[in-house]
Image (cartoon, rainbow, N blue to C red; front, side):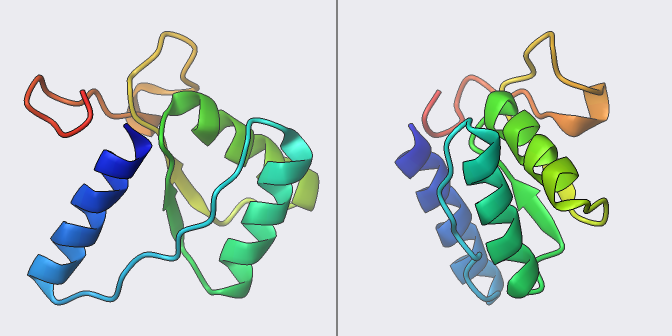
Length: 98
């Protein structure tokens, strides 16, 4: 499912004539997410669209670990434990990977 979502993002970037996203993979471990956050910030990334809400929460924890607060983060799946309704996206039934 992650590869389908990433392929959709890449296709959208190509269609818009945008640069491809900076893709870094991480786990749900805070230390791993903190390393990804460091990588994104070193590439001047301003926002992260995580594979799902669990990964987005790991990225938020990684940001806290790094003492950062200036990186926008959004997840997907709209799970009940999402920090805010504005921090997630519920994919429609026809979305790739659903």
